[in-house]
Image (cartoon, rainbow over all chains, first blue to last red; front, side, top):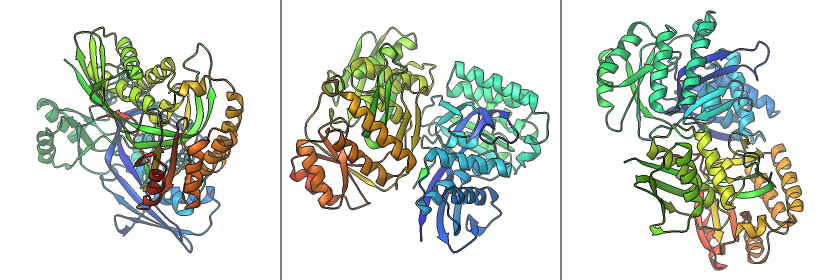
Length: 294
Length: 294
């Protein structure tokens, strides 16, 4: 009877471009930039007699990406018994906060530990990446969560094939997230018309690489959100309210979700603004810890 | 007047092979495996009128690798004023615990923040790597400290050119380090006769890649230390004492230093053994946090 536990930061994406290579999950991914967040996902895995059972925040859940990650790791480890995976997901789900990628990553690490699997970290991250692709929940999120910090995914693909760097950010920055309602990412990613988004995303990322820093990331994220037309409705209105009050803000991709950054102890005003617009608000910080066993 | 602060884990190396390409610091480095440690180096950098001043644990120190890292980052940022860098180094210096690499890395990050430099994390790690080479203090340490965790450096070179993966280890493992006296690494690295060491190191790393895990890392580290003859005298005697008491143990490369791992709360016996042999003892854990601003 094996047991393992792991944590993954969640992660918000400010800039992205998609790179889909049909039939090649190792080459498929995304470029972009975002922030790994301390608020995240914890997974506890235990071996059982048979079947894969997933609990989400205490309830039996349709959490397909976790079940898929568990199945892929079991397969790679040559294990054909059962698994029970309990997940505690702190951020809102479906809000562009990388909870699917974080769940896949935390599950992969916890299951590997439960099975005593001889698989490297990068191999487990690759399996989490595959789980995201199979479930259509994300493209390049796992690349960032396996590194942590304020990340730039410079080359797309599965962990081990990608290339990731970081920009610097003051460590005491508070990240304020305002979430309205879940979005089905497939309706955006799968809907075609992505060429224009990809062009704008690659251009924003190139500029960030030239001048890496949190302020540039925030400005370029907003330029990306506006230029692509992805920020609209109450997301755009909330961003404007935040800007008028002096907060740098943009949209978390791809969710009906706004994020702002504030100096230590200065998040209060942004929280008030977002709550006044009806958002569910989460205050967290950048996580320099990648996903890891706990 | 700018100010920045950063932390780097220290790191112990259990297995290594050297890869020295004369005249090419980006290609020069090491392969190997080790553990990033929570005990580490904190650096605070401030801009001054002129010159580079380094304080080590409160005293003006001959800490050339930190001064060199500060100079390289200032150069890359186009800054020609002065800098004052205060360092607090927790582990013993000169004991194969990566304090030079950690100092270079923490200094590079702190100076970049003090200057508001637009340099990416990987670029700063590359400059820290160069500082280590210029001072002859290390080869592949920075590659691991920029990633964190239980690391395998699969391909040598500066960060951005290297390739790093991790093996898994239970997060509550206690790492017990026993340090005897400082060793001048150059007397070992520069002394020739490294071909046999490199052959054994590459072989041990290949085996670890096949079966990545903490237990294999410990066994292969000891095989490496014995097979190369690097473990001798009181280092080898202490390892034997620890093994007889059921602790997995090996030698931190390259220092007159022994390390052992123990389950949570089980480090006491290893501490007693190492203290009885006259070692300075440090108990710490694996750091999954890479070097980062604080």
